[in-house]
Amino acid sequence: MLLALFYLAAITVLVLHFTGFLKRHNLEWLVLVIAASVIPAVIYL
Image (cartoon, rainbow, N blue to C red; front, side, top):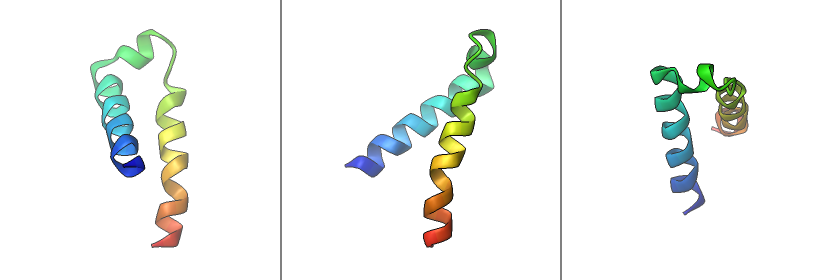
């Protein structure tokens, strides 16, 4: 269930990034937060 919520949040952040919403509202740091949260999974696998 948590994985599904993470995927939903990541897809939402990516869509908002590519539409320019995050840039307009100065929230580009959310992309970095999602990227940093993926690092432990990449190291584990």
